[in-house]
Amino acid sequence: MHASPPTTKSPWSQASWLKLLHYKKNSWNAGWTSQIDDPGFFLSPLGKSDPQAEWEATQSAFLKNPSASCRFPARFLLLNQNSPAATSALKTCQDFQKFKSYLSAKSVSLIFSSYYLNNPSSAFGHTFLRFNQWSDPARQELLDHAVDFAANVDTQNAFIYGVKGIFGLFKGTFSLKPYFLQVRQYSAFQSRDLWSYRVKFTESEVDYLIAHLWEVGQSWIDYFYFDENCAYHILGVLEVVRPELNLTDELPAYVIPIDTIRVLKRHNLLDEPDYRPSVKTTLDHRLDGLSSTQLSKVSAWTDLEQKPLELVIPEDAPALDAALDYLNYLFPFEVQFADSPASKRKTQLGRMRASIGIPTPKLNIAVPRHEQPDRVHKTSILSLMSGSSELDKSFVTLRWRPVFHDFLDSSRGFPAYAEIEFFDTSLRWNIERKKFWLEDLTMFQVYSLSPWESLYRPLSWHLRVGAQTLTADLCPDCLAGTIEGGGGLSLRTLSLLLEGEGTLHPDLPGAWGYLAVGPTLILRIPDQGDWGLMLKGHYRYRFFVDQATRDHWGRLNIRYSISKDLSVIAEGGLRRMHPEGRMEVRFYF
Image (tube, rainbow, N blue to C red):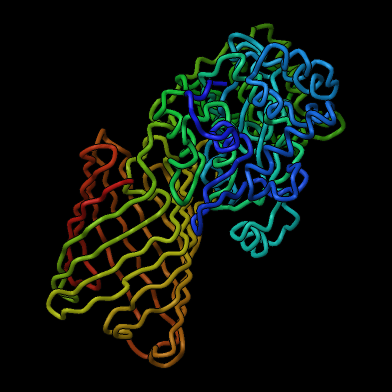
């Protein structure tokens, strides 16, 4: 632990004590409140909101009951200024020493698990800690242990999950797991790459972090999906080690895992990351370069309904290597059980591969630096747009998006085929009409446009929920609630979706709402340095309306990134054959 600078403050008001108990200054008065919500974490009945009372209660407990230090070893070290005598006294704490010995940590790494759209709580990625037993953490990392912070979810209902996550109704806890289980969960089960950033702590600082995790690991914290989440509290325990830094105060109002990395990098607390490719990434490299005949064999060998031919030739070795990886990708759970069909097929393919007598070559997968998480743009935007159209004449639009990423942003560090936005808001001022209105409010929008490949046939999909002001020919100045979505397929840069849309407003002609259906076409040119391009169009046929039954538009957008935090976007297009264009200046913060 870094020593706090000399101060005349009372010990209970020093940063080292306030950070250790996760106190934050109240916004409504001059007091304090701890973000630990478990009453069992405090030795004083007033400890949740009174740092002085908790300090005095802790001192008293250590004097009256020496075993109290075994429950709160980090407090004991702090009160005794991390002296050798205090460290020696803690050696009598058997459970704590077992915990510390179990980790046997020489260093600690921050792990970032890449984005996973199939789970709302992981759509923005995930961060956790790995305690490294070896001087070179890359050598024996599967034998290390991980510490995670997550919500204890008690429902499978998506609506209830959302409500409880937003309003802090789940209990969040720290948990200790073997690192190889984390690798299995993220890399094998969810096909997520892992990035490991070694934290620049000394061994004594790592020991102090372990002592603190022993304390908070036996307590719970209210889990809030948008702010007090895994990213926030992982940074919070690291902040305890460096109390002179106000790391959590640098986080934005909406906290996502990449913010943890960004703050730590800002203070030069992270080394360059190591990269562990997922099972899917490894398989992609195995498949790369296989002929169509070899791909057909891979498909046949991994079809559990077919009996594979036992007779193989040396030229089948690359295809068999790919087939074994493909089985791990298709059946990550099943291959763990010896009596499952997938496991039996894997054993059979392994025998076939061994009969060739050629060692499986080691894959040299280059680190994809363009996907490195800390190279991303900031995730909140404020943009100003100016344009004109035949329908709305001249206008100015102000847009604010608190999180996260769309296809017109630079894709460095982000998934190339995903768009995730929350609370995206656009306000428009019509210059001729001198009128101001809410043009669009997107509560959330997700695109997943994973491409079809040689063996993969993923469904591309889109979902948006929000409100938008309808066009004048349909319902002038009507702010209508909308939900739209659909599915289709993607081929690298080209995506075709069949989508449906529901819109609701009491002033719509003929009904309170309408349904619409039609295709959406998206063509995206991947980042070319600082440039990006997207062509998008859709056609909708509306039901249950008396007029304007058809809607169609197309747009071409070209982006140029002036810097990581500033870009300009030119847009031109047609809406029902009426031309429109705009220029946008987008600032990231």
